[in-house]
Image 1 (cartoon, one colour):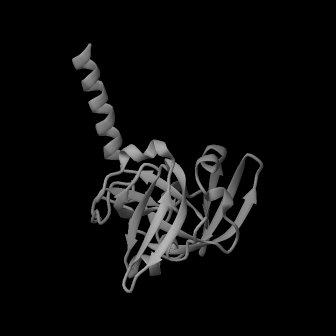
Image 2 (spheres, one colour):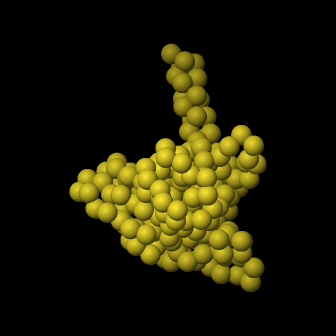
Length: 202
């Protein structure tokens, strides 16, 4: 589990194509400091497992299912990625509960800069729309963000200078793909209410 608070920008060191999978090697500093084999690290919001490590890099296997449902398949050597280690019991929950299980790929539609912040509009599959509400939580490329305006097929977020400087959303352009994870609490509420409603009408 993660919080959506990006710890650092890592750099893709290598991408090894294995046909139905890739081996992704990432150079990092903070997230590598205490990483052990089997540990979980979120890469652009996707939970990956450390399979190998050196003093400066760590490697994860990315399976076909993950490649199909996330933007990780488009990564190349030199690309920067958002990194976050799995949360511990002692850590502050600065964002919201993030599983690292990407729901869908979104696309940056537009950026509207202001003097001290920037509003970004992101397209999403229509089936995710029911989970978003104004001032609710959304994870974009592993970043815990507050929805400004929730639409049926897109939503807006407002980025402060810290987010622009320390995450990939500082340089994502219109047309770029991003990983989306909706609030898992909304999913549970939907399922519980659906079961409750079914019981009442039975």
